[in-house]
Length: 289
Ligand code: PAF
Image (tube, rainbow, N blue to C red):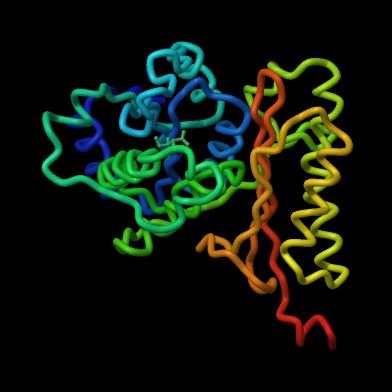
C-alpha cells in the first residue's frame, strides 16, 4: 500500500495508473476507521482493480459549534487497518493543500438538505460536496463507496454526481449491524447497559414498518406514528425525528410508491443514535394483482 500525502503525488500516481487500469474504487473517509469503513473498503476491493482510500478531516463540513478540533484522529492505526483491508493507495492530504487560499467558487446544496439530520446542520452538506468534488477530480474513480447509515449524505452525493455529470457510480453499502440489529456506530459505547438493551428497538421498529407496508399500509403518518409509539414505549430515549420520504429525492409523500426511506434519530443520555431503512414499494395496482 502506498501512503500519499500530497495532491501533486496523487495526481501523478493516478495519471500513470490510468494507462493500465480500468477500474478504481474510492472510499472517502475522515479517518478513525471502524468496521463500517472497512466494509466499504472490502466492497471496493471486490469490484475494482485499484482501491484508493482518503483520510481527510474536512473543516468545511463542521459547524462553528461542532467538534472539528476534537474529532478523533489516529493515522498510524488507520494506516494498518487500511493496509489489512487491501487498500492500494491511502491518500492523507493536509488542509492547506486541499484548500489553497481563498476558494473562488463555492458550492451550495439546494435540495435534499432541509430534512433529517441536515435540518440542524446548516452548511454541512455544502462542505461535503465541496471536498468530494475535489477528491473525485483527483482520484477519478469508477465507483465511490458510501454507507447507507448516512443515507442523507448518499442522497446528496447522488444529486451532485447526477447534476454535474460525474462519470462515477455511487455505491450504497448496507448498514453494518450488531447481532441484535443495532446499527454499528462508535457512539454505541456511550450507551448505558440499560440503553444498550433498548437500542435494538430502533431497527425493530423500522422492520415492523416495512412489514406493515408490505402488508398494504399506505399512509405515511400511520407508519411514522407506529414507529414513534414503539420507540417511546420500549426505550428511555427521546425521539429527535421519525421521518419518511421518497429516496433519494427526499420529498414528502402522501402515498407510498417507488423507493422510500424511513429514518429515525433518538437521543439517549450520552449518545444520539440514527438508523434507517430503504424500501422499494410497488405501485398499488401491482400490489393488488
Ligand atoms: O462520511 C464522511 O466521513 C465524510 O462526510 C466524507 C464523505 C469523507 C466527506 O468528507
